[in-house]
Image 1 (cartoon, rainbow, N blue to C red):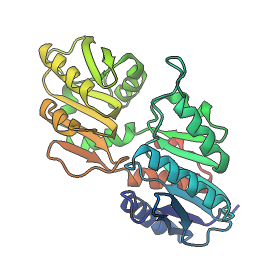
Image 2: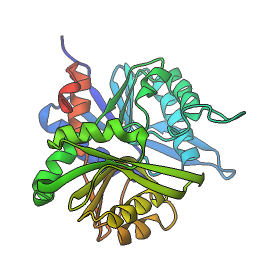
Image 3: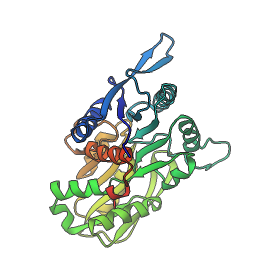
Image 4: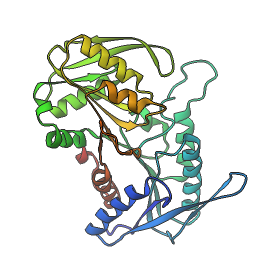
Length: 319
């Protein structure tokens, strides 16, 4: 059965435009039924926005590649209006490509009278969208929040390929670390991919958000090279405290891989001073930094979009 024509859509003024163009070029080289269109945002004097899809998308599968570097409130507002515009323009299917899913850290009611942001965002996206593609979601149960299919992709194979090409010696005496118990399953999955038998787990106590007051390590790291694996680096305080503790316990080199590099405030400089190397993906746009290496995801997402449009399995990307 023939598949529909496919439109790759992104904001030409946003930091995801280059990402989208690279994906389009890779897809267009495979099949000429892939097209590129602009998501145009007009701003009124009072700050309101008007969203428009530049080209005709009637009966096309539309993959909207959203800019993860936007401020959270702007990210959500633009996403809502883009989806509504596509829905009312008679797109056949609307697929949100969200390399970093914002508002995913508040995934439960951890104190009285707080919003469950991840659920609220899921409800809004599910109103207009047919499917979501995201990467290394903060919590794997996120799929249960959506009334539509959500494909949570995993970057473990991308990281393995990158380390094998760029840091082969680092893999010879390696142990994987999760900075907290909640990420232990993620660390174990990475360890399995890298052929590492054991993992170590950090224990942290926070006095407030972004402030780590106590850090301990469960496991042996002496004379080992350590790769700390997490999904998000924001303030960087957890990585810094983990690195200090690892050095106290006589670990050798300390690298960290966090899929999504938010780097709020002075985090980028603070993290780079403590770690031997910081690795992130370009799920969020990253300017160049001498001690931070960025793994490109365009090939990975191009293959995911191709498989989605063609009705092929996505699990082969990370099995």
